[in-house]
Image 1 (tube, rainbow, N blue to C red):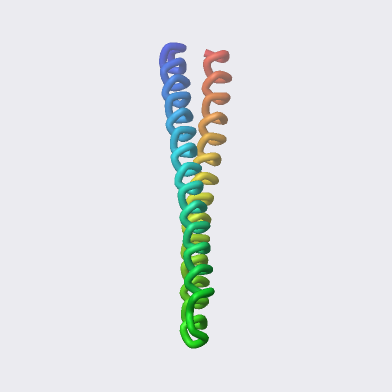
Image 2: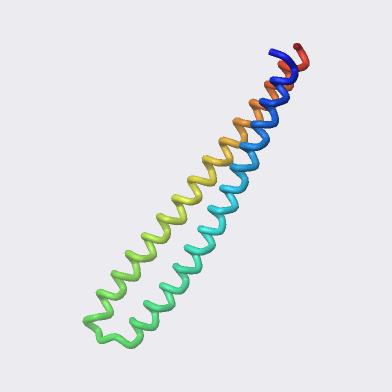
Length: 106
């Protein structure tokens, strides 16, 4: 392969790394949004529980717990996606390193 091909490959990998970084930013914003939603939900249930009858309090607490668990799973899902993006970035950086070494040998 010629040096120009390695240069194009490196530029392509750099572009893909930037895309992965943008995805990470999107996932961080989504996590922030879910955390805010979780906080508002918790406050809403707290207010409902404080005004509810004894019978209703039990079911409201169960609903609050289920909602908190659902939002926690959503946050974990985004964190897993961020981890995958970071792993992909690391892999692409290794590919760039390999391409640079191959270009020096060419």
